Amino acid sequence: MKIDLHVHCSERSACAKSKEEEQIQAAIACGLDAMVFTDHGRLVSPAHLNTLNQRYAPFRIFGGVEITVTEQEDLLVLGIHDPLLEARTWDYPTLHAFVRERGGWIALAHPFRYHPEIAIDIVHYPPDALEGCSTNVAPPNRPRIVETAERLNLPVVCNSDAHITPSLGVAYNCLDEAPEDEAHLLRLLRAGAFHCACTLA
Image (tube, rainbow, N blue to C red):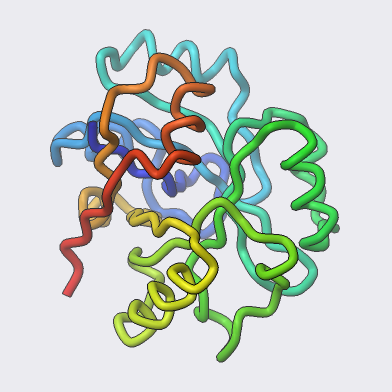
């Protein structure tokens, strides 16, 4: 099952150019089986996700969020639908504890994008994964991300970070099995039951 864990739409992310429906249709057209909307500081309501899943079945749509912490790194959070995540004042240790307490999943998006070194303490507060390939991961940074992930025994995920439809399909994750629901998806991600696919040069 091919899934992109990092997608934006213009309805919820000011920096995105393509609408929600356009992103979904582009994901289907390029052969993905599922996607996760991770808009900047904005959640998708469970009711809306249910409507989208009914409309586009068998394609699967999950909801997450991308959070910029005060240390100026971006984190993807899945599996939690608490509106508190939409606050703009998270520091990383507090966010990490919040996600862990609620059984969510957290990944560092596009490491080394903003700083020569990762600005959060991922040694004492390890995320569940590092994003190793996306449209916002510079090619020279990919080996550093893999080395960091191997050193900390963390998996690497590949995502489009799509803000516009042509970005869909350039990077995704191949799950070992199709998740029955969100909880099953998180179990697969935590278990590393997937491999990355990145077509970016």
